Length: 129
Image (cartoon, rainbow, N blue to C red; front, top):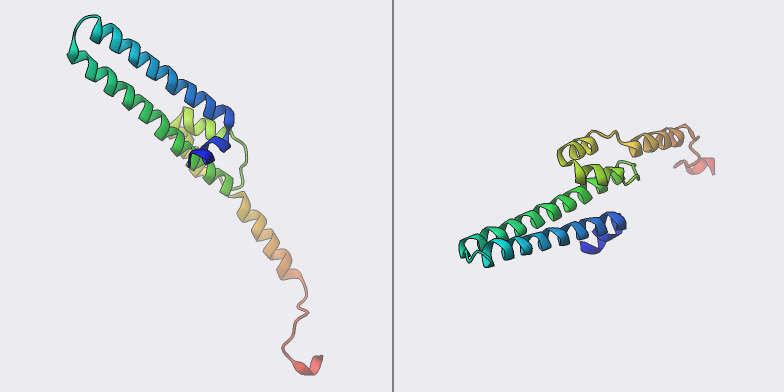
């Protein structure tokens, strides 16, 4: 799954990884400033849990955005803007991808109509051979 997410948009994956790194560093700094320097062990747990919650939310959002981007690909939209919109503005991006019309259905329908217009060259009647 991680390799698939990495292949979606390498720049986006690097940005999310860097943002996660910054949040972890900020959590460590908050832990040092508020927990160790003030000798308040009660502050340590919220710093650690807050950092874990933020990192989890970011990665879950990125995974969901990847799934919605794959839905956009299935519908025939190959632009990565649907991945970015679904990540940066989750609810709007999810609704946008859900509302996209299916480009593949129109192509399949036109192909089926073209196939239906072709004359039938196959017969089951042995007398016509």
